[in-house]
Amino acid sequence: MEISAVVITFNEEKRLEPALKSLAEIVSEIVIVDSFSTDDTLKVARKYAACVYERAWTGYADQKNYANKLASCPWILSLDADERLSPELTEELGELRRTEPDCAGFSIPRKAYYLGRWIRHSGWFPDRCVRLFRRDWASWEGDFVAERLAVNGPVVELRGPIHHFAFPTIGAHAARVNNFSGLAAQKLYARKKKARLPRLLFLPTLRCLQTYFLKLGVLDGFPGLVIACLDGYGEFLRSAKLRSIWKKGERIEPLSY
Image 1: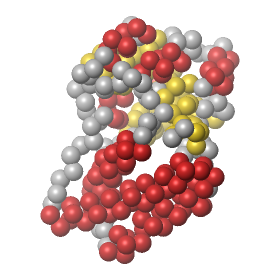
Image 2: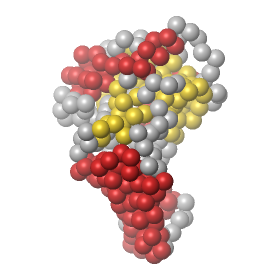
Image 3: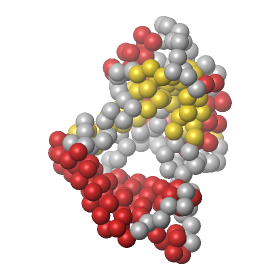
Image 4: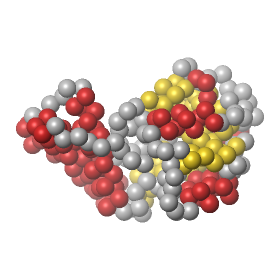
């Protein structure tokens, strides 16, 4: 099987190189679509990819679908700039390349590194998602928060994980929670959902406890506690912003990269 790696970027000069290095031995080409970065992202990209394009940001799903159309191989491996292939996954993909699989895609677990340790619980692992798929049998969907890949055909599970390095600090994590809560509120508003006072009062606490105890965040040490608290914080912000939209007609701006 011939594989094109597809990566979308914006101001990723500090995180992009490890991602591209991890792809070098596995894929036939690397396609990068950048949203007019103002740092040295393009300089890093051109060290590893012959196919580098610039395009104004249109949202995660649309940007990734555009990038997929630029790929020349029948199979696409979608990777974010803050991710990289683990050695186990690299070996597994190397074996897979010598075959022609009879499926539409492969789901891959993601393992996050956060606050100095690998997170194995807290609802963050295995976090399976389809990242290797036939180009003509799948497309990204989603207008608000998290894009998802719609696959037309059977999906097979791989064992090796993608390593994820999303949040270098608690502040970066909290900022992301704040950004996504606004888009989540907009999505709920579009569905005519309301934020009643009981939701504001009780749901954030329940969400925190669920992450920490039911999802075993307690086993992830201090990072697990932070994740649980920020899960509760995100739930509160989502409900509060939804209530604000209904009361004031407040508009939530589209999420930037």
